[in-house]
Length: 192
Image (cartoon, rainbow, N blue to C red; front, side):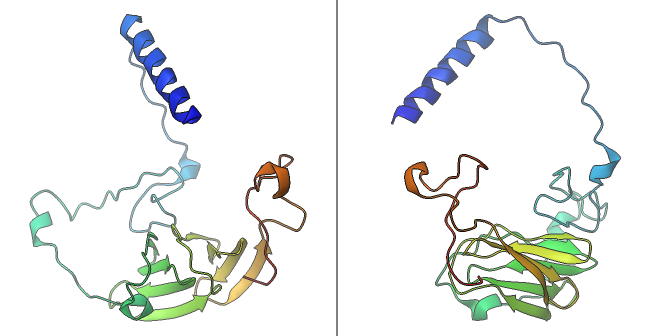
């Protein structure tokens, strides 16, 4: 409740200030650095590219052609289970879709056929995942027990794994956050 009152007060102050302020001069937006990439056929991370464009500039889909779109294939990951919500976003590279499910499985799916190329399990604790990221031939993901994984993009084999929070970090009076390094959560025994 205290946070809500603070936010409401801040919003009221900003609204009052904006109403009495001089109109801001429109400034041109800075160009995005080339190092962030451009969107195209591939979406190597959730939101598209490193600049978070979140759209595709492909020209084949327009306001006139969108009505002709339809499904090319359908696949039921996790056997079509609806026992847990799936909230992960697919990423795509070279015609392969990569997605992680609530059941802690990462899938590579052929974008042309819907065939599952590989499946890798990262743990047994069900947890919502927002998605994986791609880079340097690896698929990066996390497990529900605070591990980050790098999977080989072509096979799904685990290339390496690291624990996010190590013993002694977080918990106690800090509410699960370590004030020294800003990490939140708690480690668990096991490997994912």
